[in-house]
Amino acid sequence: MKKLFFGVAVAVLALASCKKSTPTASLKTDVDTISYELGMVNSSGLKMYLSERLGVDTTYMDEFYKGMLEAAQAGENKKKAAYFAGIQIGQQLGGQMYKGMNYQLFGDDSTQTISMRNMLSGFIDATEGKAKMDMEKVRNEIQSRINTFRDKNLSKIYADNKAEGEKFLAENKKKEGVAELPGGVQYKVIKKGEGPIPADSSRVEVSYEGRTIKGQIFDSSYKNNNGKPIEVNVKDMIPGWIDALTHMPVGSVWEIYIPQEKAYGNREAGELIKPFSTLVFKLELVSIKK
Image (tube, rainbow, N blue to C red; front, side, top):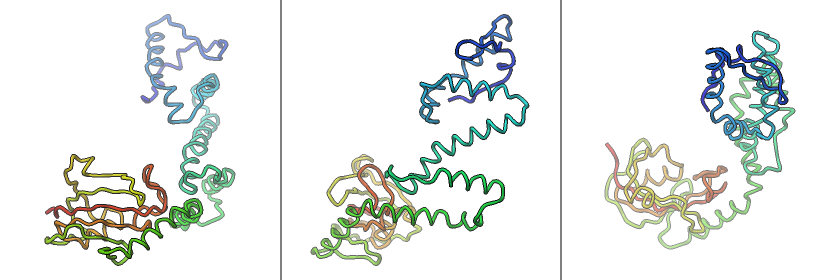
């Protein structure tokens, strides 16, 4: 939605209340008319923005207009301005931010949520300099604590998925032609390359096809890039790819079997890659870029 422009529009609107408590315009002068027109053009896409970005149920537009008018007419009243700013920040905290924090901790498990009361208490206490914990320590440790909490929680939800992957790797390791790299990535040489081996700092050309242990293809450069190789920085790839690429001579084609902790771990990546998924790739190292 375009940025709202408040200019002179509010000042010239007649504030006589109608049934919906919205102002009625008086279009007697050029300023009246252009003020009204500015209001019109800046409303473009409003309902979509409210619905899709702010999660507002547009059935209650009368309430939206009421709040909008009160905020717009607060003018230089600092007390009211602070109150309306609080409403705006509160909606952000209680809306998308709250949902985002819940997803970080619980994934798709909608039966669990963080404590809204404690979140708001922590927010206010920290703002007032009265936090019950050391802010610097919390900042340094929060992401690790989130990861640990999420891993513990999702390990219960996706225990079967994790177990299936472990069973698959244990059985696959016994198959003829399958070897294992330090760290647990298994591989089978389809085509032996004779070229140099890239470092983790190298940029390389590769072709690949990824699938789940049940055989579902979730990505393929052969299909999605018209069969042409793609360029990647080795160090930017998932750990299992890094392990494989730094052992593959150019010209090699390997089938690699990546344990979940060397793939996406407790993260979900698309519809087919659930947390703790063991993955299988056909990986072709075409060249090392200069």
